[in-house]
Image (cartoon, rainbow, N blue to C red; front, side, top):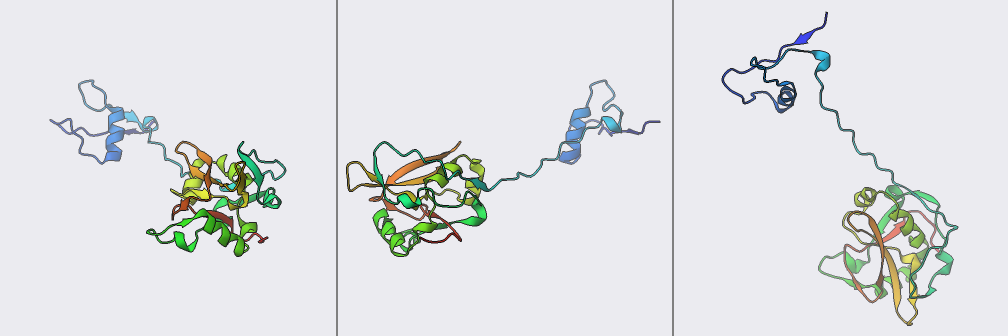
Length: 208
């Protein structure tokens, strides 16, 4: 014999006095047959589905054998020895960190790309910097991963500085959140970089 559940009706009022959860069930079962709620077997009462938590994959896969496509204005790659340098697989959340020059840490201050570039070279940090290969691999990932790791930031890839064909002009690639997708772009070292424009560096990759 099937067990049934009798859902009560509040006389004289069409407004539910139940909790939102129960009220949602009542709304699904309501039938205008002149008697209020119809008695239904319990197996016919469908509860709302439980939403599963979002699981993000932070794994970056980089094919170091593939040469990146550079912009047409490029004359030369400043650090060709770093073009294919870096691990082929790593965790973006746990293996990569953002780094800011001291002049970027104060929201009221800023520093030029040339000054940051000189500091990175002087401190022997280039070998730990991410390059364009890394940026292109990150671009293919779920944008939610980037937003989780680097929310609202324009992240620079210092291992892939290029010289412009016009001479004495240098370009620096970056990865940023373009809204629907992640985007790769280029800025000039003569630009001023602020707090939301850090570089991306491996936490434990050998310096060059």
